[in-house]
Each structure stands twice: as structure tokens, then as C-alpha cells.
Image (cartoon, rainbow, N blue to C red; front, side, top):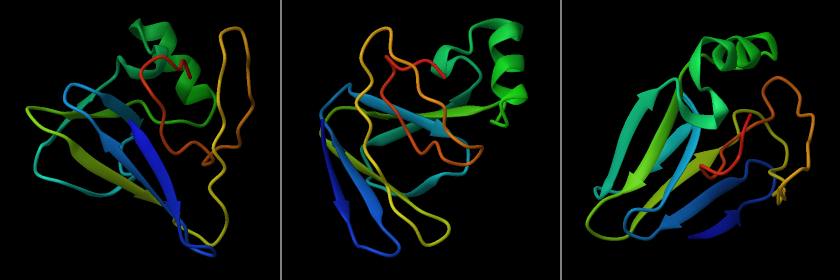
Length: 115
């Protein structure tokens, strides 16, 4: 997986996925994707296992549904852009670390991240 940020005032995050790699985001965050990317929307991504996980996300201002973007068969690319002028800040999350992000501050993550 390779990620690159493009732009300054209205940045775009482009992520190149190798076959079977994936990222997830809240529904509606995608800007564009290539043909080899398969999109799946469900409630189980981001640690949303069961009703309690969904309620925690909604109570925190998030969405019930998360969308997974997975490259099938060959490499693919997905892109996410900001909706308002600002910056995209990459945050590397290690096991045991926690971050508080404002309501619309989450853009995307790998499947290992729990929201």
C-alpha cells in the first residue's frame, strides 16, 4: 500500500492498493477509484462488531455504515478529497494508542484500526 498527498488548500489522498489490500472510510468519502477496486458497504469495519460497536460510532458523531475498498486481481487506486479547504494529516496508529478526532475529521484507515 502506498499513499500520497497531492495539493495544498484542497488536498487529495491517493492510495495505491496491491491485490487483496484494503482501506475503509465512512460512506460518501470516496472521490474516485480505478476499475480493479471493489466497494463493499457494511457495519462491521472499524471495530463495529455488533450493535454496541455501531452505537459507539454513532454516539461519537460517525456514520452507521462504513465502506471497504479492496483491490481484486490487480493493483488499484482509490482517492479521498477534503470537502472544505484544509489539510489532510497522516496519523500512524500503534497498538494501544488512541486519538480523538472531531466529528468529520476521519477520512480513511486500514482494517487494523478500530474507530
